[in-house]
Length: 102
Image (cartoon, rainbow, N blue to C red; front, side, top):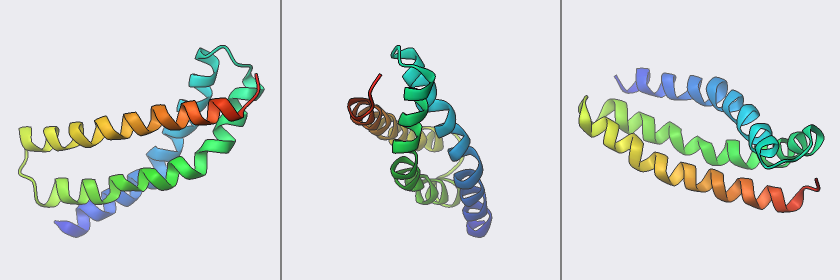
């Protein structure tokens, strides 16, 4: 069970996370009224640090799928960690936005 959870976490980290970040930062830039060039510059500056920090999901998912019982406890676990993850994304987006010109 642990190896399956670990495998799923690794696959998610290296497939879904890069795609998510490649959509998140340019979209946020465009919604902030930035040019496509400036939005892509945000992605270039933020991708690596955010991807590395996003690796927190590997142990979270490992614990969630191997130890925590199915149902509501798993949902609560992901939602609590998700609040901190979204807060980090907002902070990182703002930090990079201040570094990138329009």
